[in-house]
Image 1 (tube, rainbow, N blue to C red):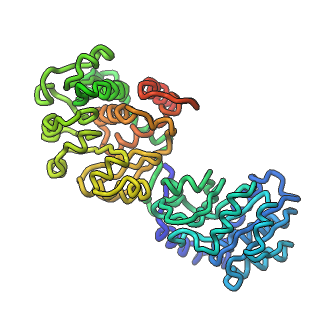
Image 2 (cartoon, rainbow, N blue to C red):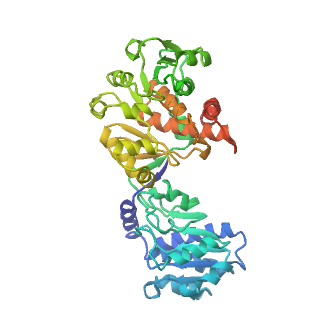
Image 3 (tube, rainbow, N blue to C red):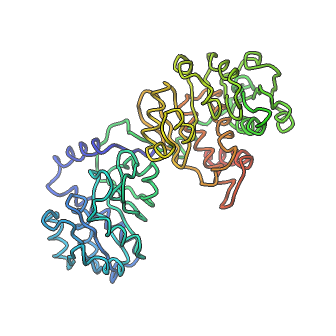
Length: 476
């Protein structure tokens, strides 16, 4: 897992480490890593032109010391000081000794336009609320230039703990972050400002439970269901799908397509789209009655394409097995009935559906995804998978939130969420916890989306058909 910690936790770890190190040693570690990353990006340091945008905090000190290292290697380095009277004195002295020069903000535009690299050391992890007015022209000049932009620890102007962007912010091509990732580097919209992210180890000791974690191939591979020699279709789990309607039979077909590829041994379908499901997937166990008459399952998926029929939703919520609520099921479910359940419940809304459940606007949810997913998990006492450009998974207890690192914008296509619901429901039926089923499903689904699209538009059925290839890639 890649982990991210809040600013308060990082600050505490930094203080504890600085107490054991010679004065200034921690900043030198950060500056060395930053300078190495800048040199890699430049390719040829000697003769290059570098501009440092320097604020008043330690973030500016990191930039100055890194600039001094680049100047010693022959780069022409100019530091633009936003607050000359509050600039880090040691870093500024080091830059000047190395041959670097200093400029005021009002004379910076020409230097930035001529630079091959701009280093954003305006604000560190203590910044809040977007860039201050005096820094905005510098960020705009950097964005308009041909220079590569490197952010120190995180792009100035983003919210480090939430990923929100509440004003103007620097857009970086590369962010060099120290000690650990910060949540804002994982979550949109701030993630879009960070570019590529390079983590520099400076020796921090951090607690075991991060605020955010992003699964990697190995983490997901360890959770994928693996049938044993004595397994049969029932031991592997049976997932029930209550979905579709006369108007939206395709939602049922797509949910079943995801479920059949999710590791469970069998799929039971109930609903009005039985003919369409059996025509496409004859291996599905289709029932004429409602969920109560469907037979034993280990998990239910309810809601995709369901229209306004609330009865199947209520029946499924009354069962004692894990339930996944999606699409119309989210709207039709009684919140008190969800909260009263003793078996796990997983909600899988997109931003618009989450906004309706929270009584907020879609823009508010998309601008504060981490807050939204945590609030929704607490409100429904359920695990929530919030879909979107950053897919987040939160448990109601308020612990570590998982962020999905896979996916492609081509997944924003009709029916893609139905495939995801079936896949996650199948993983629930195979025995995974709601948090693990949601995390694994999002990861596999995102990777399958990349495989299906391969740089071109793809339909939801293409995503479903690419799941086995993604599964094999992760497993192997």
